[in-house]
Length: 53
Picture (cartoon, rainbow, N blue to C red):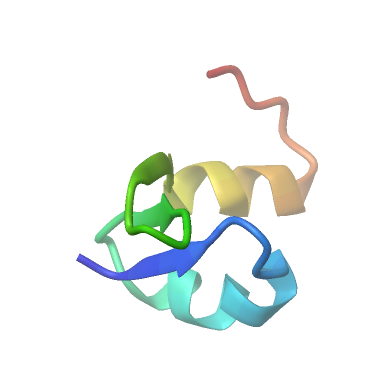
């Protein structure tokens, strides 16, 4: 599963996120899970659709 850190700008990830159906996990410096980034949520936010979580 692809992973990233919480301080990584979304602009640095958007190209990769848009190409994979696999969610990105967000981790801290000790590799503890902080959250998950879903492709559909990111693409909906970019398109201006309302996103509810």
